[in-house]
Length: 99
Length: 246
Image (cartoon, rainbow over all chains, first blue to last red; front, top):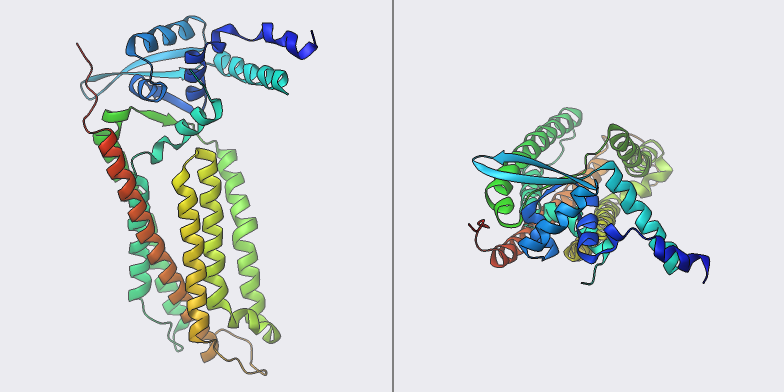
C-alpha cells in the first residue's frame, strides 16, 4: 500500500461523514450561519441536522450561540479554531490521496 | 450524499446575492449617478475647473449617501424578507490589512494607469491621439474592467448569472465605444497646444462623459433587471417565511 493510500485511514472520520462534511464546508466560508440556512443548504432533515451539529459541537469543531432576533429565538453556529484546522487538514489529506 | 466542498463553500460565500436585492440597489445607484451626470450638462470652456469640481462633488456626495442608504435598505429588506425564508449568514470579517491590500491593488492597477494615460495625453501635444480616442477607449476599457470584476466575483461565489452580467457589461462598453466612433472623432490639428481648455479637448472630454453616462445608465438597467429576475425566482422558490414546527 502506497504512502498516500495509507493516509486514507488517517482521515478525520468526524468530518468524513458526508452530512458533516457538507456542514463543515458551508461553515468554513462564513463567520456564522443559523440553523435555517444550514437546513436549506444541506437539505438534511431537521432531526438529522440537529444530530450532526451536536456531534460536531461535541467534537469541539463548532460552537453554538443562542440569541434573539426580535422575539424569535435564533441559533447561530460558527467553526471553532480547532474545527477550522481540522477541516483544512482534512482537505489537505484528501487532496494528497487523490493526487 | 454527493458533497462538493467547493460548491458548498461558493454557495455560502454568494449568499448575500441570493435574493437579487443587492443588484437592484447597485442598479438604482448607477441610474442615480447617470442622472446626475446627465443633468450636469456639458463642461463649459470658461469655467471648466469650477464645473468639474461641482460635478465631482455632487457625484461623491450622491455615492456616499447612496451607498449608506442602500446598505440600510438592504439590511432592512434582508431582515424582513430573506433571513425569514432561507436563514441568516454573517460573512467573514475583512481585516484592515485585507482592505489596505485591496485599495493598493485598485490604485496600482486601475487608477494610476488611467491617470498616467490622461496626464500624458493632456501634457504632450503629440500624444493627443490618446485623447482623440478617449470617447471610444474609455467606455470600452471601463466596460471590460467591470466585466473582469464580475467574472472574478462570479467565479469566487459560484454565481452563473455574474458571467452573463460580465458579458453584458463588456458588450455595453464596446457598443458605446463603437457608437462614439460611428459619430466621428474630434479632429485635433497637428500643431495643437497643450492644456485642457482648448475647445477640441473639451469636446473630447464632454463626449467621454456622455459615453460614461450611457455606460453607467445601461449597466444600471442591466443590474436592476438581473436583480429583479433573481428576486422573482427567489420569491417563487421561497414563497413563505419558514415557520418552526411545534
